[in-house]
Image (tube, rainbow, N blue to C red):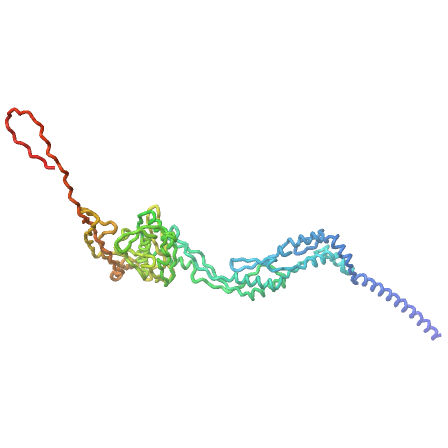
Length: 510
């Protein structure tokens, strides 16, 4: 009985186990089916994909390059994205910055390409392809934060290198020194701002740009470069630039002469002479020729007469500059006095120049640049030259004096002219007859109102005495031949009546 009971009990459990196995099997089959339904990929056919792309619209809450494309067709979305920033060759731009400068390279420069077609397709099919689980997850995401896609941009490597090399060369600049811009109403020197120069390493810049493309980061690129500072700053030059020399003359003469003076003043105006540099008047003005725009005006020829020549009158500008330079106490390398005394400056204060000949040159002996300001005031016929630069290194003020040391009397001579009749005598006006002179030019230094040392002789000048030449005629004048005369026949007269006799008058011999 016991044995029978065990058999019955064993059968009961066997049935129960079979049912459990069956249930587990069914459950596994269900789960397997559910898993298959949920997770097995269900790819769309090419025809289905093409149909969706041609007729479908993007689900709401989809953004490409930050632009909302929900409700748009494939083509509409493409147009919108390509019109947006960095969405196409036409709208792509990569900006480079260095200091205050900025450069840009366009998509066409870099020959860029994008994967916009792939991105648009992925975005349109996001909730329509994949497994059911994928679709369900996508729908949930679309109902929540949505999806953001970014179009990938790539550049042609060769074009990228070419553009970067060119940009590095363009951005590499020499430093710009401050430029003298004249003086303001208060007599203060004005300068443009200095600029730092830069050297850009093309290889380093190319590496930076390549990294930007790898990271799809197209924000402006701040270029790194080696800075090269200018030699001076505008502030430094302003502090070291004051009026150190000035002189004024009055100009007159023909219209051509006045225009030559004004032209020469305009040429030397705002000229800069660097420390140690020599200013050369002839070099700065250039040859005085008609082709160069110089007009015919009187100039000294042969040391004794005036004659029309191109550029006549420019010596007044070199003479005015000469005096300003003396007051500035700069070193004068070359100066010549005129052959004849000048009317616009005292003896010893002139400086003649001639094309290819005599010159006026001075050297800047100061630690900073000096600047020439020349102004021809047409309304008042006044020529003023000012020199700006560092104050005198010794703190001196300068006084310039010129003293006429002798007068050379002009001789009076006669010159026979056989073509002129005897008795003819006229002054030869083809030469500039005048007395000559000698003169000394001195400089005296003062500090705190007191003279420092003895006055210093700078120059000696000698001006020609040009004789007064009278043209005297030597051609004999023939004596006039008397005309023949006949004695008149007396007319018979009546016998006069006797009268008281009187004294008869003298007769005229003609």
